[in-house]
Image: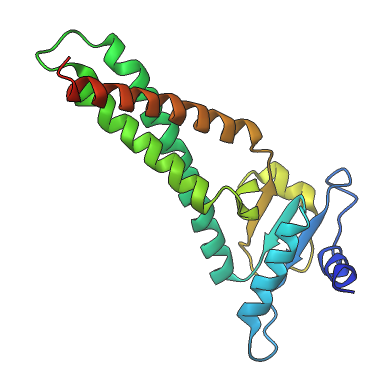
Length: 191
């Protein structure tokens, strides 16, 4: 019974005209008594779990919270990748210094990469929200063809495949972690 309810809830607003059969869920900002925020959050959770292609979030507070959550996850991902690449590449191209550049630059950057990847893995990896990105593309938004919005600037989420992105940052963090362990081992043994 609950699966049927979730299916009806998610599919109450499907758009077949402008987005080539891709599903769209609109979370409407309709306040009709107590517990509206919880209702909005439940609708969002159902849409995320149903893997809807586009989610239009009208409630301002929920849209801002969701957008912020996605931005923090993106920041962790990018920090992990960029600091890992810094740890792996920069010490190899810098000129020789009295202290090895692996110690000065590589170890802190590798530690940052591993830490961000671990935090992302613990907090975001299994969250259905990590499969979505906030879109501001006017072309993509115009294809949604959603009418009767009560909020003039809703948050629009689009589902993206993040398999390669996760694989990239996990591989870079793994190699940065190996570099960190090797650098610390060399320091410990006095090499």
